[in-house]
Structures are given as C-alpha cells and as structure tokens.
Image (cartoon, rainbow, N blue to C red; front, side, top):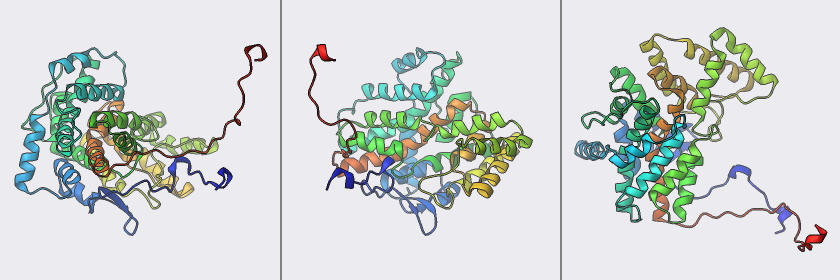
Length: 377
C-alpha cells in the first residue's frame, strides 16, 4: 500500500488499540460501566473505596474484604518527612498539578518496590499511591498558603480524610457524600488520554510510578482533566445568570470553545452528568448559593437547543468543587486522587499481556536529500 492510500486517524479516532475488561460505555444504555456495573448505580449505592476495590479486583468486596482494604489504605496515608520537606520547598505559585506530578515521581524513588514489576508489587505500589496522593495534594496546597501540613486521620473514610488534610475539618455528611460520588464518577473511563499514556509507558516495562507521573502530565491539559478548572473559570467570567445567554452568543459568533461540553465517546450525553448535577444542586442548597448552578442551567439548555451538544462530567463537577470550598487549581489534582484507581487497573492489565505500543506515522516532510557544503548553505 502506498502512503497516499493510508488512512491517518488523527487523534486515533475510531482506532481500537487493545482490549480491556476494566470499563465500557454500553451503547445500548449509553451508560459507563465499571467491570459491568453502571457507574450511576455504583455512585448511589457504594463508597469510593468499594469502587477502587472493584476496579482492581474485578468484583465488589464483601464486608471483610472492604474492611481490610480500608485498613491498608488508611495505614499508608502518611508521607515521609523527606517528601514533606520537598513539598515545602516547591515554588510558591506552582500549579497543584505540577506539585502532585513531582510528588508522585519522588514517591517512586522512595518506594521499596519501585523496580519490582510483578503484579503483586504493582498492587502494593498502587495502594500506597491511592493512600498518599491525597496527603501530598493537601500538603502542597497548605504549603502554598504558608500553613503546616495536617496528618491524615486513619479513622476517617477516604473522602472525609481529604477534607481533613486540606482544611483541618470534615464538612457535613451531604458534602462528603457529594465528594465521594465525584470520586466514583471520575475513577475510570476507558482509553482516555491519560490512561492511554499510562498504558503506553507501562508497555515499555517502566514502573507504576513512571506511568502515573506521565498520566498526571497528560491529565493536566484543559482538553482532558483540566477542563473542570476551565469550567469554573468560565462561570466566574460570566458572573451572573442574566449574562449567561449573551456570553454564550458571543462564543458562538467567534466560534470559540465552550468548556465542559461534548465528548468523543458519548453521542447522547455523558451518563455521569445527571448524577453529578444532582449532587452539585445539593451542594448549592447546602451552601445557600444557587448562582453557579443557575448559570450552568442556562448554558446547558442553550447549548442543547442551539448546538445539540450535551455537557460532560467536568461541567457540573467544577461548580460542585467550588461550592465545597476547594480553590480552582485544586480541581484537577482531585481528579488524580480518583483516577489513580483506573490508571492502576489499566497498568496491571497492560502488564499482564504486554506488547510495546509503537504506532506508525505517515511522513510529510521533504524527500531525502544530500547535505550541502557549508559554503553553499
């Protein structure tokens, strides 16, 4: 076949790179599933720890398995004194995604199993990352404000402990539940950009920390994980509900991107959005501030009416996190704290039946030529 006959799938659109048993968007129900369970059902009926166990082990845990899983995670939450000093030395003003990327890379140098690529060692490392990432995110957040870190509380759930290490307090149960739901909804989503990055790095037989560090770098971009931050910046730019429709018309006129809308996988709307929107509305009620959700309602209605484009998960999650009290640059690191579960599941799956990921490209440069003498250049 000549190069002119080769179809180039820009962005790998429509390309099937491998098989996976971790998750799938079921076309017949338009529903994202983890190991066969609809994510909206998991969000309502399970905790984030149960879903993490499901992603890593293939089945939901029984009571004894869940208790053991929670105990192991809680025990692994503290950071080393050395890493705390490293985090304290990060430049002020550094983006929290840069901070957690660097912290995870440092954890790889400290981890006793770093060079062990066996499945058992990878599972141990995954648990330590799950436990330590929230502590590192919170430590970097507090260091950036000149505050001392707060030690994790092993008696608290994963979601409640995150508020504790960030703010030194645990909010109302409704807030913790909304946060827990967001973690479940963000935990996994097939061969997205960061997960495919993690699998690509794993295919070279690099270790888990290398794969996760690369995945975090991929997640930072506003076309992927950073979209939830961009959504909240957009809502703040609009400011009030009465300006929403006019602001959107201006975007249409300039053919500018509206953050938080559209998805390459979903054709009839992101199945995670109704659940997260419900919990974002609850957050607005708890806080007593409906402004952001009213702006969101207008934008979503007009985008659907005029463009037939549905919102994605980042659209309701941005204002939900803001109403929970998180600063905007914290939104994507929270995504990391959740998605480590999906990344690790895919790393384990990739390593179990590995083949180096190395696609071809169609060359579009100049034809082969001779190097001219320097006098002729």
